[in-house]
Image (cartoon, rainbow, N blue to C red; front, side, top):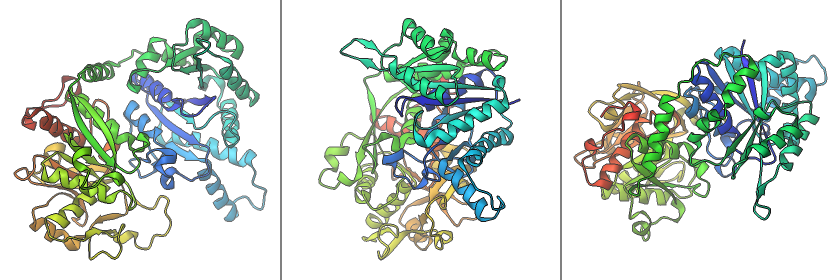
Length: 555
């Protein structure tokens, strides 16, 4: 029988519920259990696909093409499982499905209400992922904060589900802020007490409390929380700030967190196998000690919020650790970058990366960054939009098509080297209608892409409407651009690069390989990009940059 674990948050949002949930998932998987994870978001958007990254951080795309919350990226990286479209749902998605059913007459004229219809639909999502995956354990994180009016239906659904499923098969973890008051020189428990009281008023008693703080929450404070919140003392855990999110599983394991969860759910704890995870974190800390850093600039548009490029940043870090090097990542606002300041801003770059994105803002700055990378032979990786601006720069400055651009930014440009995909022309809805999810790519032999993947057919996740315009493909190739990846029918350009005799490492992908990067198994293109950046920094041949032993990678 599948066990269900629900994770709620108290006092404030952005506490790290997702990291707590993902860490528990990692620990349970290390004990031999099949773990799946799910995020329930109580906002009215159907999904985050049309939301600004400033509002919600990056949009993470699953293998089966669902635009989801960024926490799913954490889940995948921690438990090393590909999640599905069942792993993220919102109030908007629930309401949309119910309204569609009501319009179709499924309710036979009855009144559709929050209880029982909305709560039943939420519970069905809890059951669906269990049935589809056959998981031993499903961990569901509830977005937002207990007490939020928009989350009440979800809390009630959890209460009902736990009662129906049976207390032995469900438990609830409440992650709550325990703030440190500098003037008093102590952490305060009252916010957590109030948060748990709110949760209990809604019919749910937490089984475990995880205390989030920027200071250690000592045993006496945890005992006080246990007493006031009616939780056993050994079921209150502290999760103070750590050097890295990847340290959290070990920190919680040291307190017996996963063992107590197994005990509560009647699960055999089995032996834990965290060797590869510990090897990664040890290598990460060793690499980060180095004062010598490889500098990589990410030229984007949402640079005020690093979470907008979360998977890109993590993939770069994974790759740095793979080679035992300290990679320093700096976000650069493409809108503020131009020919007059590019030397000042990007002068110290060992590698330049242009990530995915949409819209005109900052495009010329990104083209400027590509030009610098290409002409000065600085390693370059383009992701999605990063491929498209690389093609625009090449068309302008190598092919002689001076006004070349994308039809997305300039519909009337004379040389639309990037154009709308034919199957997107009749689409008017914005949400969930792009080319989404994993698609096959035929990797061309004897290319940098082939060297990175060492496979002739690869699957990477996509999120785009525009593509390289095939009307200009021959001209680009004749000018020296290499097409290193194609769709199996050869209709779509999936990867481009420059020959090694022209540039040491210049590659771009229409896909988003960062979504599949794992701590101990970096995404191939990111890994090789970072290898090239390290070589640039150290003044050596990139083939002399060898992988660190923990990764299992070969040279």
